[in-house]
Amino acid sequence: MYLSVEEHNNNLLVQFKGELDHHTTESVREKIDQKYNDLRLKNIILDLRGLTFMDSSGIGLIMGRYRNCIEKAGGMAIVSDNSYVEKMLKMSGLLKIINVYPTIEKAAENL
Image (cartoon, rainbow, N blue to C red; front, side, top):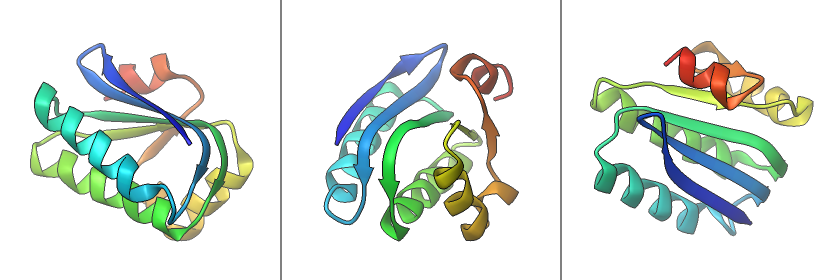
């Protein structure tokens, strides 16, 4: 799993490449939470275009970061062009509360 976590237009941008599963979620969670708290940002953009696999622990990771955003009166957006990932998000119910955009720029504009 490759993970990039950085500030982008006053949002925390998290870019994933590889598999997000029970083997990787704990270290990913720690990296995201540390940067989110260190930078004191409210919004998170998750770029899932590079994911090749995601299981239920990935859904849990997203839900937990979403709760963190809501607690700070912020929001979350997802960037995806992956039908598999979007199907997982839809089945989990996350698409009812988090919007999906085709680009990072569109996601940032709507937060």
